[in-house]
Image 1 (tube, rainbow, N blue to C red):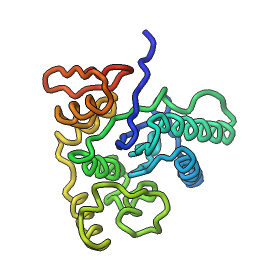
Image 2: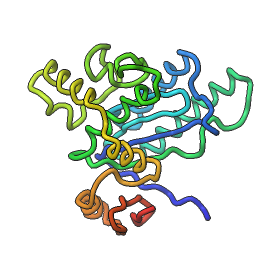
Image 3: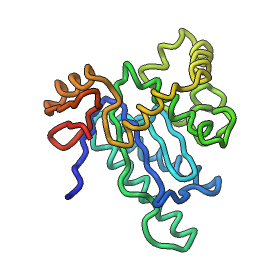
Image 4: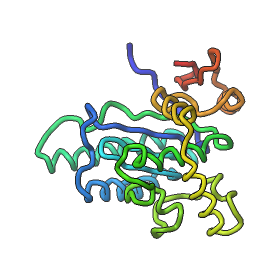
Length: 236
């Protein structure tokens, strides 16, 4: 059976995950991380895509992206990112073949209820993996930029962290405290499953919203979350 094409919606954030083929490393040296981020900066501007969060792990990538005008811009951007990075690694390692494990995973996020949780989930990846004690110790995520400990260069304004306080310092303190709370196991599992299965990160109200916005038919099964398909949204 052929793969179902995915649907992306402009104006909504999307949680993106892409993994290395057979869980192999896609980043080894400092230059690998730096080059990937430079490419992201270049192509997000060309495709009019905002970056709300990122975390580059050894064998996979987490991104929270919002296509401002064209939902398909996410696919174009990810194609550029994965292709350029794959060519670079193959050239350095004198190898051929795919670097990535198939196509990337994507989950449309309910901004009001789940975007903040998703930002925290992405930026806590190094802590969960045991490679950092605190998120600010890890140099390849958006956490340091979000809390202002490094110069702003990648992140675009998001609709949730701006409401954390009336000043930059109050917002920083509030977000640091929010991340320090950690993630409850059930929330972590929900966010993980949503992106692994290409499902919506949202509840039934969000399903209704997407249905009204897109005109797509949504089929929900019990408490399961829906997955976007071409022309329909069905549970997986």
